[in-house]
Image (cartoon, rainbow, N blue to C red; front, side, top):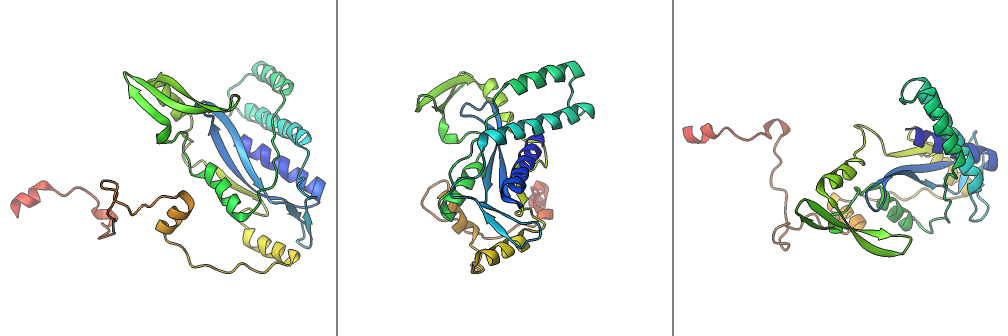
Length: 270
C-alpha cells in the first residue's frame, strides 16, 4: 500500500508542478523476478499530458519527454520513507526507533530506480503492454521443465547475459517462493489515479477529447468472452482440452444452490 501511495503522490506532484494539471495513469503491482524472488515494483502507464483543475485546459508533454527520472526517484524515495516512518509510529510496521533509523540511513544511501520509458506507440501496444502485467502469475507452466526427487527445474531469463538458463531448487523452496506472490485478500493490484480515477473518469475523458478536438469513440458491440480470449491471449477456450479437436458448448447451468453432489441413496431408492 505504501508503494502505491508514494508512487502516485510523486507522479501527481510532478504533474501539477511541471504540467500545471492532473495526470492520469494506471499503476500495476508486479512482485517477482525471473527466479520467483521477491521484487516488488510498480508499472505505471501514464497519459502524455495533464488536465487543469478546472477542466478548461489540456497540457501535453513536450515531445516524448515526461519527467526527469533522477528528480522523480528522489521525491519517490522521500515519500516512501515518510510513509514508512508513519507506519512505525502507528505500530503497523514492527520496528523500534533505532531499527527504523538504521534502515532509513541505509535506504537514503541507495539510489532508488525510477525508469521513465518512451511512449507506447499505438492503442494496440498499450493493451499488449498492460496484458503482460495484469494477467500473469509468478511463473507460467511452460517454464517448469522437471519435478523429480523433490526437486523442481525451471527456466529463467538471465538479463545480464541475455540468455535463458535453468535453475533447480527443492520443491519446498519453489513453493515458498511462489507463495511470496500471493497477495493479501482483497488487495487491489491494479489502481487508477488522477483523471483516470474511477469516480470521474468518464467526465474527465469526455472533457479531454473536447479540448483535443477528438470525437467520441464509436460504441462497439460487446465481444463474447470466447472472442476476447482469442484476441487478447490467443487461446480458444471452446476447444476440448482432452482431444484438442472438438468444441465445447454450454448445455445447462446448474443453479448455485444446487451445485452439490447428489445424495447417492436417492438413486438407490429410485
